[in-house]
Amino acid sequence: MSGKRQIKFGKQIQKDLSEIFQRDTRHYFGNSLVTVTGVEMSPDLSLARVYMSVLPISNAEEVFDKLDHHKSEVRKHLGNKIGKQVRIVPELAFFHDDTEETASHMDQLIDNLEIPPADETDEEE
Image (cartoon, rainbow, N blue to C red; front, side, top):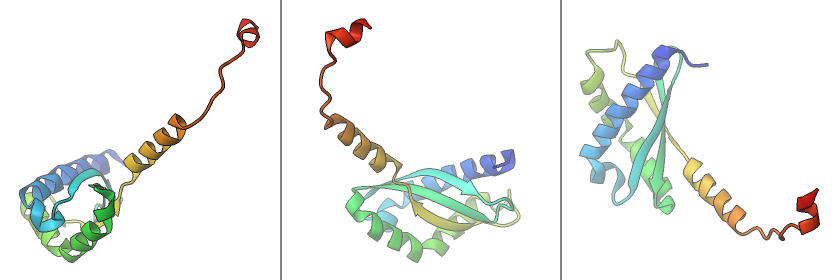
């Protein structure tokens, strides 16, 4: 259960990281399209779990390898943005958010279902 402070701080981190990534897109992601979909904060606000979606999906592993390599640089930029508002800049942990891919897969499965039409006698009952 997240408190108001965790949620508010998570949204601020999400906004700031999005701005950082927009400014230096090619440096971190190459030609991939990356979206920060959410941030979950630990209760003591020392760890930010950053969830990101990557398109095309085939580049996801490469993108997260680059992010892990540049994690300290991203944290430094984040510290420059929020340093005056917080005591410590949280550690960053990046995770792949595959919600969109899962939803797309579910839509394909549903579209491919062959459902026979209902009998008229069943509808009357």
